Image 1: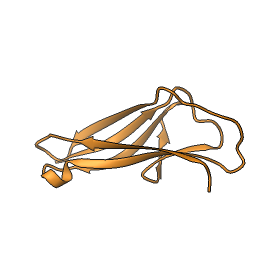
Image 2: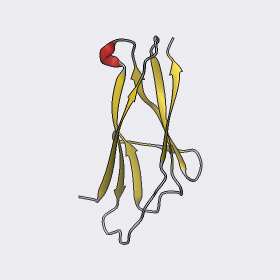
Image 3: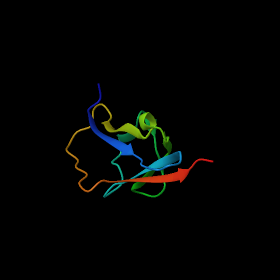
Length: 100
């Protein structure tokens, strides 16, 4: 298996309307060649060199069972990569929009 690093987080809403949301991840620098980032198994669209957007990452509903979503942000290095790489200062933003 390729080496991985996983970050789990939860998005919660207290809104009285159903919302859909994107997750935007900003790294201190672009991902090195051979390193990939996924959210819940889906790849992101790079919006610039170090910002990645996961569109429609989740839906939060108004009922108590649907107002929390758990996610896993995973960094995977391709087999055969050598050396250490650190990415301190990762920023995760949730951009929500009301569903009509």
